[in-house]
Image 1 (cartoon, rainbow, N blue to C red):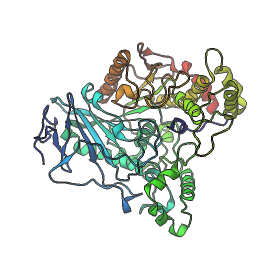
Image 2 (image 1 turned 135 degrees about the vertical axis):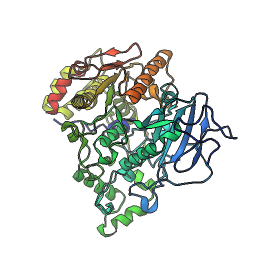
Image 3 (image 1 turned 45 degrees about the vertical axis):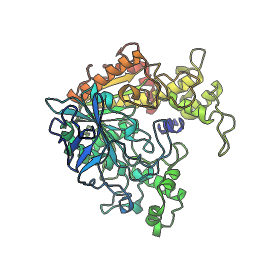
Image 4 (image 1 turned 30 degrees about the horizontal axis):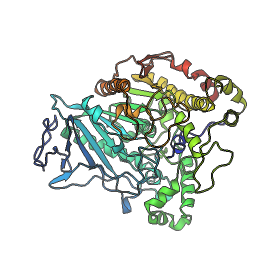
Length: 536
């Protein structure tokens, strides 16, 4: 069987010192200096944040030195120290990247290793749990400040930390010419995340957080990162619970050989091919050139976490099967219609058209036809294609776009995520959800899709975070948002989201939907056994 490209297409085809000192319980409610802003002291110096009605925010906190000059393609160094009070009322720059999904901002900045902290404004008798959020974006897009933590902080009573980390070639280029003294190369973005977790361990108490109660959470590539940290020796003890949304540990990361081949393709794209000066050539290229060379998924260079023998000595997929991941409770799940976003992106980008757009030409939007759907399935699944088409017909009740979205969702998301959940359940408390609001608000930017996208990839994020890129939630959806915030915060606090843990293939999976939540037979709903048979 020829599998569909690993879910990198999901993004591509969508294109488009102090007046008040924090104590173990954090600043007193409404603590402010003469500017009317909250002030806390970290191990680097004092920070002045912003006071809002029910929360405080501290943005643009440098958790590591800017990775400039000799620090490009090097492990992160400790962040700067300062005297006086540093302004923390604006986020830092996003790491260098192209424009991806609507929540992503194009950037050419390498000075980007910043994090943001949101906390309840009320004081607490005991330290609060901490949730550290790793954004998605295929390891080439995204920034922490796109995900406002106000709701999880104020309603969930958490300390919420969102993180920037190096992306693309600057974060994951594993070329031997860039090897450090220990011989390892690549995984700089994972090392950034570890540095942020160490910062949280040192400074959580200043914001009223408990460094002994940290949940590491992420979506899409962020979930892949969480899985990597479950296998990384340097991450042991830095977090105590794990949340993985719309990705899993079942899909392997790059081998060293695959990463080196991708790195060589990248160096060809930027014109650095002479082995004698290759490292110097790469360091002479500006960030914009490096970002352009990585490009978009499907047409660019695939870079991401790699088994490097140091930061990531084993593939998390193998460690999961062998029961060798850090033993922490897990909350994991998927969206019911993940891949409809990918299918809509194909339509928008002209990939369904008889003739692809010429370079520089605005693509024409072409809906997926029944014939084209069948062609794609045959190309992907070969001799098993007829079985797929029989299970996922395009007919009067389901358009070709919806059928292809269901195929890709079940094959690329539901099966591996549920497989990973079953493996986790053998060794640690594991809780599974399916986000299933069929009317989830779509991106506010751009035209409306021409077919129902349902609970598409990223659709759950506005229910957990305060965002400005999606349409507003309805009253019914706000109630679902409240339920999800309670579940995520309960898990961060106790390791239990409020529903039964998964124990076997027929175990409990929580459905989160606008019309009411409950349980589902996840395996049957997503043809789990069928897709397992195709995986072989």
